[in-house]
Length: 271
Image 1 (cartoon, rainbow, N blue to C red):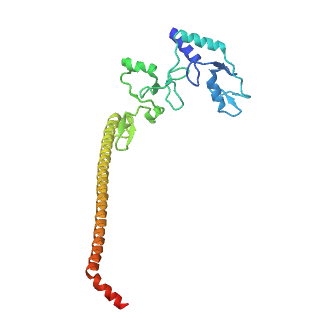
Image 2: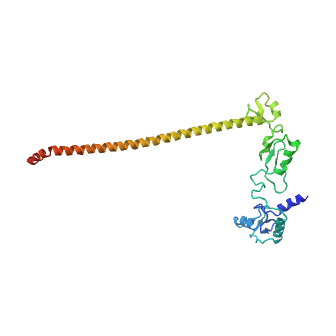
Image 3: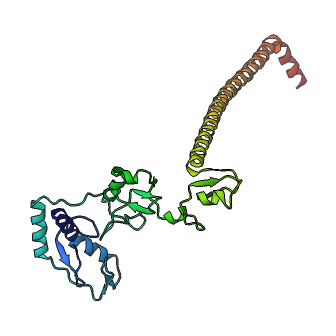
């Protein structure tokens, strides 16, 4: 009974916005309590119409927030007696989470779903499935909101078989009735085989990626080599052109030295 009292106090004196113990608690007109900073921030994003985050009751005009000193004193007293605030990564279920089907009041996140019970459990309520022999054969899976999808719509049985002929999950009754003579296996075996095939495909794809990366690296090295070769050839061409120009200049000079004295009188006589 004492434990239930602590749970009640913890929930009663927690802010449903930040999920922490109330800080500077205020009571709004509908009777719900929040941290002053939390409800003020919640309302600051609204325009003219202000509502309670829990019951959605609307207020107009915006209520004046006044610190509830009685609640503040009780929260401080609870802190002194050992009650701590919920951790930052609180386990309460949000809109996108799978909630525990057995929590009362504010529901915690489910950590497992049972295909036999067709229910989801938080850590606390899952414990009997882990400890009690009666639950040992129950199939626990990751939390799912669509547990009903695992139930045969015809026979209202858990679909534990897989029909490879029709590529669909079926229940045991289906396997000896509508799917008699089909290639059927346990759904768990099919899942294991497909998981293995998927892992092999991933490994093959990864190997192909690595091979392509090696090829790209070799091509980059070849491209760099070709660029260096082009630079070398260009330098050689420039050098050859320079040498040819030097030879031409030398030839002109030699010609002038050899025939200059002979050519000058001819040029002069022509004029």
